[in-house]
Image 1 (cartoon, rainbow, N blue to C red):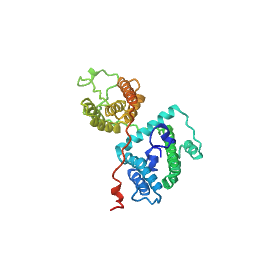
Image 2: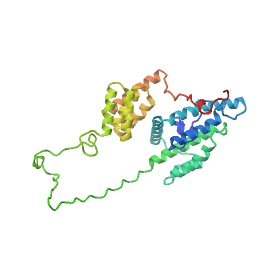
Image 3: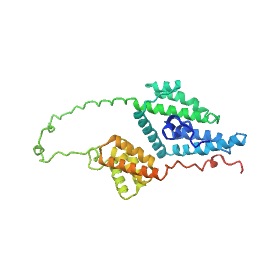
Length: 328
């Protein structure tokens, strides 16, 4: 059995589609992911598998240890699941800019043509395949490949559907007290002509609180703490702060760039590539981003010259405690 014999869908572009391996939709909750995992594990785990021949048992055990367990390890944790989705989304965007994707099956073509009912068609195609996944070992890789193709198309189409226009805020009418009328300064009023003789304040959106106070925003505080940790070479703490910063402001190029550099210092090249690439798309001429891209290229070249490859997720060791052992 080849390590990853699937070359269709997202697998074709060098990423492992853990959602397809577990038969989960891309928006599956942690509870749904765990349910799918336990269902598949019951079929494949040596302690619970009902396979009879030793050859089939060995095949089931390999499926479980090499595919199912690593996929669950990634999707079971919030942080690694979010990062995996980010990698999938970035892969699809990169592919879309380079290739015009065409699909042969009628189902895939139907999904690619969907717009208003994309989610409905996606689930209608996904559900039957997921329901019987791992029932037949001779077709399981073909089914995983088809699921991954549906995931690829879903992300591709969803990324091209324009977001709805933001709702217009209702106009605000200023009510002037009849006892005292205070006229706001006109845009052309010089600072020295204000009643107290002081210049009007110029609040910074990035560094002030939404209420207009002087304190830093939560985003700016996280970014500042991340920079301090990065300068002190506490890269794990910097990564944690930057994840929080990007949760508050997902399209900030500075946060993506610093997170990419933190991953780079931690020798986590796949995640470094994702965030530095995102930073480059958001702010291609930023000197910090240009430097990060150069450092990434150098470290990637060094890794290739030494024959290193990114680490894959390790296998889980805890499943025996879920079902127990036959040899008790």
